[in-house]
Length: 103
Image (cartoon, rainbow, N blue to C red; front, side):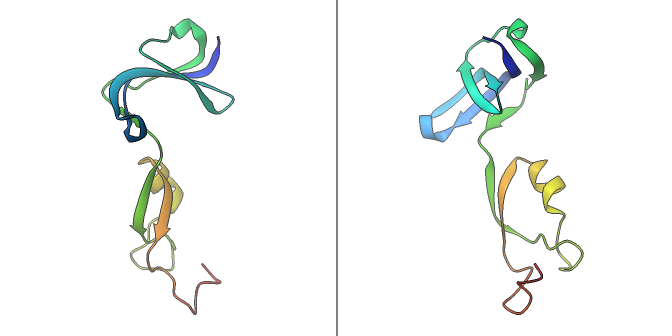
């Protein structure tokens, strides 16, 4: 099988399977197609080394301020959150009842 992307040698953390183990991940069509102890690099179009890194599902940050440019403690959501593995962020007060439509 040929994968669009293979992530090699990362430590997978998957609490749903009680798994913390070094494995390779094969991705096809934007979806995880295979998780194995070893996937040959010749089976992938693109290879990413995750040696010394963790591979996990997207993280959830339950308290952020992301109304960038308005709230004085805010951060730009996409570059800060996604770059740190956060795929879901919950804004905790950058806007209120009166300003929510603008948010």
